[in-house]
Length: 439
Image (tube, rainbow, N blue to C red; front, side, top):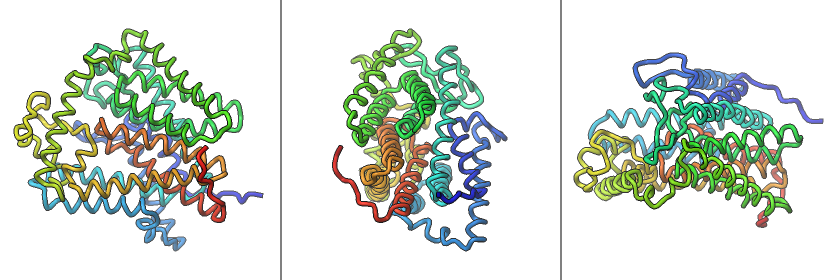
């Protein structure tokens, strides 16, 4: 007989956070100025931190001391934060540095909090399930925009009164993110997790419900009209089926790709959605691609001037006006500060080779956690949750190639989940013989 799990306040609040975060920006509590606002998620995170800290003190747990050094992933998160902070010696001013550091501290603190709170398989399952349920509301917002061609949040979040348009004239759904690129990033990451839950589900009703969720997410991914998002989606499902174990794997994978192609083709018939034309020769040679190429020139010029430590965290926007001319990139990159759409080059420019090496090690540790969890376990839960999480994370890594999604909370949550899955699997079955054969 399984021992009953006694829920703690921080665990309950964490599950609520996972539920609310897909539509976080729609639940604003207080607005400060034009861009700063307090959401339900931020309040819940403060409650979770307080509850977890008190529980650690009262139960005399050593979690506070070991949290930063429990796994390589934890260590690399802290190391990346330290490198980001030390780079202040390179900064010319503290405005962008302070803004960016607050963002990075918030993201890494949140990820470490998740690792500290979720310690059981049951809580993990509830949390991921809650996130997928929350993603339904986020995806329905996208469907609403697709049908009405109106931004669901309009001025409140996005600063626009209408949906973004592609150069080809199609609409780009943006959902509760207020931005099409951020929206597709979330949808891709939700898709991988939902795919893992779909194959883990034991009843037909749950499978049917998750199939509907997957279709909603797919419609949103296509409707965002994001080339980077589509490539990330393809990487996501490809990685999942590489790790998926089943005698029917080729048939199931083939059917999944056919469904995705069918949805893509059907949506291409809608005049309001840009699909196939986004990959035309004209579109690929358009201003969006040239804008990114010139941003890359600027970032590489910055990195060549400061190869070891970089310009300092936040330095790209701070020094953009100066390097636009040096890199001969004034035609497509505007004079006003626009965030870099190439995340890895941004880290290289701001934190140098050291920062990029630390971030690369962090990525490797996450991928290794999930690879070992999925391939090394006979338990369907760890196998499928590991595969789904890895698929989502690879999608996130692809997105970082094209979009400014570094501060995306969902991506950092996936990093935290990789540690939790690896830890719980080891604690639950330390003597389990690993399965390393390729299916």
